[in-house]
Length: 341
Image (tube, rainbow, N blue to C red; front, side):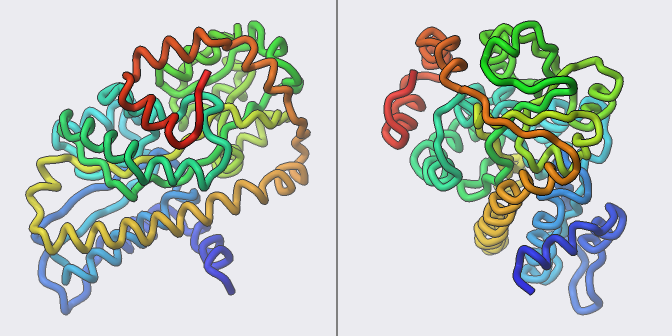
């Protein structure tokens, strides 16, 4: 059995079991010197949960129980979800959190560059850029806001596509007037407003109900989100657009992180790099397999003409965002992906 098959079996565990597994020390270990919480916004049976549980379990073992971190799926169901959890992280009420750049941009505006439309062409390119100089720059910007960003801690979510309740998206004109759910990020709203859709912000854990009740007509996400949140039950058409990439930055409260001794930090850094690399490979593979899986569930796929998206965005969208993100981040990205806009 390979690592991917083993992980699929683990992902069927319930939330209570995986949280408990991260919280119980063995008799040989000392009592935790540092206890912490890790939030993420996906269900327990997701492409984040088990990797985070395994990461912190290994850290607990290698630190002889000194650092104990409990993982909470769906942000422990706190009101306000990601934005509220981000506030908690910054204030020190929460120690660890994973979050996409589009929402991290509420505190660190330049982080929205991770989701710049049509900037990236492959999973490999995304991580080369974010593990390099651009990622280091984002890390410095996070520190200025009291947040520590792990340089090799960008978990995979994937390229985003549009799924609709009633019909496919073939060209950009098919989005005119469509109420489409977007995360609470400025670039998401600007992108779909520029495409003449009506962006509606809905927290991920409320998305299923919003689609079912037809408060929105569509949503856009990587295929893995459609799978783990069972959105295939409330949408029918998936249009392949690859319009943005998104992933989850592993973050820590800066004060908590700097309060850990260097040997504990080293253990965490080493295991973050290991388990995040495994999560990236697993999720990339899963996203590629899911077109077949979701088609078998009754979803209808088509490939949209994204040249019509680019034509509607024109140069104005990119110039506007270059001004907002700043010349430094923009040039670091263009050095790796070529001219944008």
